[in-house]
Length: 273
Image (cartoon, rainbow, N blue to C red):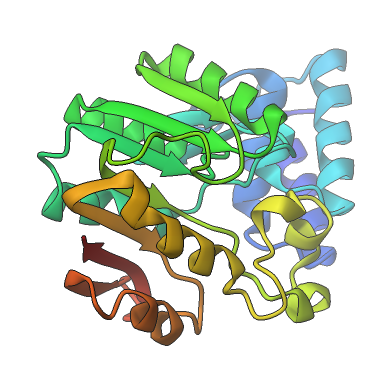
């Protein structure tokens, strides 16, 4: 079995199963099986797969056809130009969440003490620490997520303190210049309408924000004044349809702003204590 034939067959299988981006997915899975870069395929389409590579490739295709996200198969996802390790213990970082980083760098680059609430893979905490050099703390209620984030931090050379706790309950009053969060915001009533890759594989603790999707926004905003120093910023990712509710929560804060994503959808809210 040559590289070209393997890619052709894999793409056809994925396409027949209506998996999105079947050609790219086949290339990513084959590259993972062969432990090489995708560019290798264009230079060596005639290369023969050995038995072990073919076995792994077949298994990865089978897992993807069953709905397992590609990122959980390869164990990797890029975020803000860095490669993060991911497992089903943590939410897969999305490109949309990079807008939280960009907003923080725009309005609160000088923050010296930063808290990431609900860190998951550690993408926000690690990125902000490496981009700004600030002292960063990160919390998550899941010990497995905290362990994964700590491994990502060590591998990427970041200096982040991780805490297993509920939101910011373990953080001292008046100790932070900036809080960032990508809280769970999917309403429970939308559970069955989610893509199976999300519904069946990603951690529900990191997905669902109560019946209406507002539960964690309410709790974070209510506690943020305790944690933030005067003049500190709170920056959160917004789920679809949440911006009006969250804007009301910070209506009496200073410097409130909503940043849209590239599609013009309200994506990030920033408010100053």
